[in-house]
Image (cartoon, rainbow, N blue to C red; front, side, top):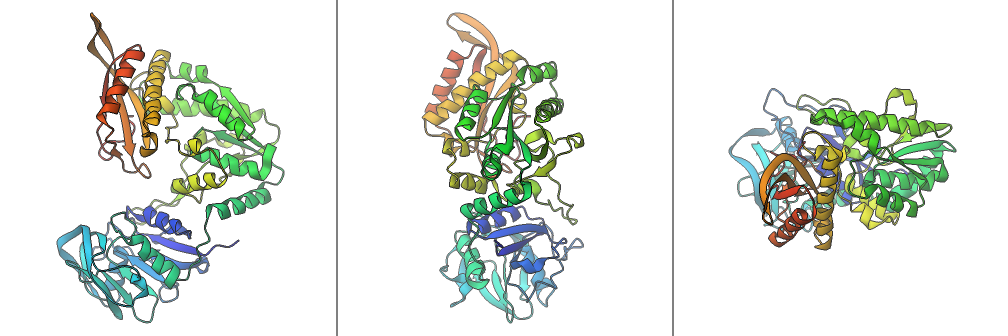
Length: 511
């Protein structure tokens, strides 16, 4: 089935992926391309959205898209930089704003009887983020909306299906942003809303059958959402010809190797569990540099995975759980490099000597879409709701060198923290949580004895994609109970702290 597609041209805005996710939420398929790499088959796109940008249309580094096959020929929505570009180079005027227009604003004027603003009323909150402003509309420009500080907040161009706005409908703070995008894409551009999880499963399974035939495929399972959903899609397509390998690197959560293997068996997958924990921990002995730890884990994983893959006769394909954000071309202010898939995804970036072709069933999906696709296949909600977990596992949550005893301590601490989040119904309110073992001993008192033992830091953040994150304000009573339980039950820990740093400037992990 050929979907109606929407083309999003990226001018480097921090919100571009968010535009795509909002469009997908309308059950409309879209793709992101750099502004200077417009696909040659642009006829397959039914509408076009121009993103914002950190650049200025008045500067020397102005970004010029080739809109000759788009403007006036396809419905187009220009957001922020896109709107200013249309004005500046089409007979209008863009100037530096007297006040930096950033943050919440309200629409004080909306032109009546406009499909673009159907079901959106005066007073609607929008999110501004620009230092330039449109002083004069372009040739043929018709004013559609204003705010108190921004007269030309929205306009259209007569004789074209071209609309432009100086605010961001894709961000949460624009309360009617969803409605505005729906008005443009569904009512004006007539794009069909046929991009659904069920349709994706049906089409992907058929595509995989056609592509793979009777070939054998090997997949490195991580226990996480992406690789698990990829495995289920492949299983539906090729059944027993899918060989899944789940490697225990000794740095998983407490009992995770056994628990996840048991869960996979219940899903009917052909899974082999490989306990290589001793091999990993031996290789990591004495290493304390975070990058060295990561590289060691990646190297040993490749060795273990390669050993196991060679035991499968005539395997031809390597499956990966790569998702869309891994694939999207990241656009720099100077024009954007070509797409590169993250080499470390799931299976450590396997080397050329494996000579396997790659299949990536999820490479068109965002993380939230992966979960919806999994739910449409009736996958366990416990698995689909799992927090992200770093590839190197607890190695980057143990600061400094690794020992088996440190791994044991952190596994015990982490288990208490995560189990308590579940029992207090807090787990699903948190995007990611974990504990860090610090290279610090501090003095304590237990009974009548002084102790000199380890300190652990607990971390819980809320986020949508991990790019930014805020620490979660967990109840004091929860933290108190969890801290007491850790200190009383985990030998070797006498102090617990809670990390209240946001990203940025901090990161989610400590290493």
